[in-house]
Image 1 (cartoon, rainbow, N blue to C red):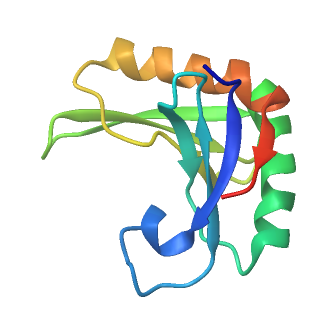
Image 2: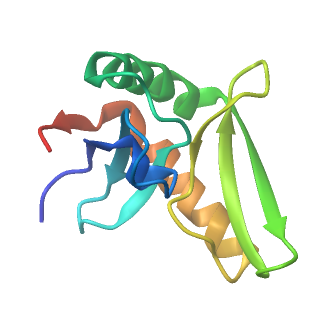
Length: 119
């Protein structure tokens, strides 16, 4: 197993619009499971790396929302700035709220110290 790490990815993959440009990031756990992802696609890798720096700080003590989608029945979390801008989100929906909360806890625990690796 490897250590938790941020990996830069094409922004279109994160927002499910393959033609969309930009760069985003995913935080992968030691077991290669996605712990969270950027909620935004950034103009370039440099902007995405700067956003990772901000997310590290927010993960340590910023705000978060747990949301429920009544259409799918799934739970997700969003990491937010002081201005309620969503900057990170769970990589998938969860069937149970407690699983979603646990995933957010794992993201918060690993994001501040995770390294950034090349895609």
